[in-house]
Image (cartoon, rainbow, N blue to C red; front, top):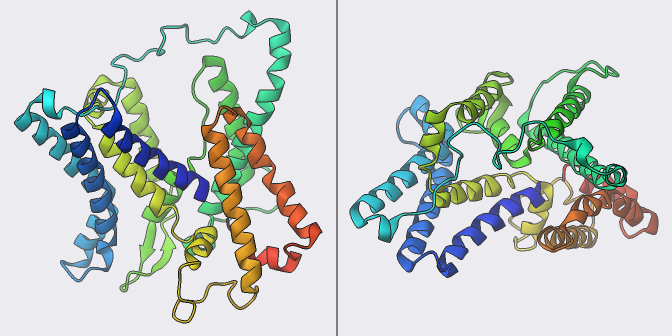
Length: 354
């Protein structure tokens, strides 16, 4: 979860920073891009907390809080539109979302992938990258499911024990079928979308009068509606034309919002921020009185090193090995226990939801 959130934030910041150095941009456009991204992020973040405000009635506060990201995106988009109309497209036209205007493959190739055009040796050779892709999809799905089912969301989703068609087993079965079908037609594989999934569950939470979460609205309507709208954008031209007017800088602000809000409640992030907290006044964490601070710090530093290594591999020319690095985390955890660096009783407390 921390890895994906960091990727969202780093990519957003890097994209905005490139507008200041790109020869295709100018200083005015760079400042406008920064303003749009900041507006989106600031409005989404501040209005999300409006639920605890004393202004207006409860219904209005909840509505504003629920639609905080939407309000941020619309406001920043209108700001960019006003700048373009008032200053002219030459001075203030920002890059927008690039969406094909027709429903077709990007390169004009046939829909069916010509798998049998590959030589025999290449078909067998694809087994190794396929194994790495499997590891990445499997871990992404299961990590996301574990985070979404975090006890802090207070969900009551029931499952029949040892039934292979319930819950997580059914998810993996459906994803396996969809991955095979998408490979045949050359479409991107379906992924769990960790940050967006956590944000979706967070948006469905129920709160008491004091703004504390008391449960989650468990339903399939929002998920179905979201993907129906995505399908509509793929199949129909009108939604595509509307989205093609959305500045990329606004999306970067939204990505920053999703990345930072995805860190809330994550134990690794709480331990990282714990390095800078005054222990005498900071609220106690579940591991505070159960694990020595030295052990907690060592474990957190190891996690930070792993996070840095994964980010480096992802951005380097060895990016194809990224799934291998993720798969090595489980043996590393086992090695920490066997070597005695982190005792098993402490590991069970520290490594529960990260």
